[in-house]
Image 1: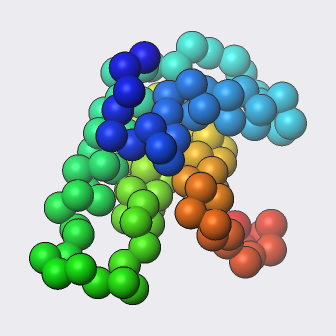
Image 2 (image 1 turned 120 degrees about the vertical axis):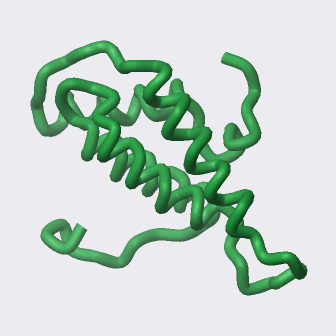
Image 3 (image 1 turned 90 degrees about the vertical axis):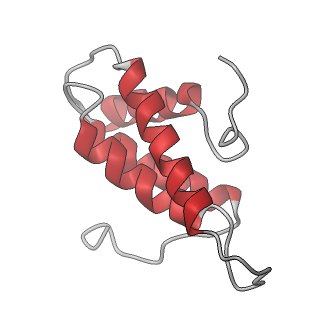
Length: 111
């Protein structure tokens, strides 16, 4: 895959690995990813990140946070696999947060 502007947070190979890990851990039907679907989700999330950046240099803005939220939404709703898309979306979002040194403080039920 070509290096994309979001690759420092996550890439398609990582998302596919997270999807497979979710299937192995929680069961589910294996299917090949719809790669254009994943590329679209990543591109749309990155566009949201870029266009939501403030005009001024604001130290309170966390780079990648908007990308993370939109990535979660797009992967979960676009259904890039026949099974496990929501798990892959959650795992991908948590991966992006981890690249920023962030975590979600929630119980399994809340998550």
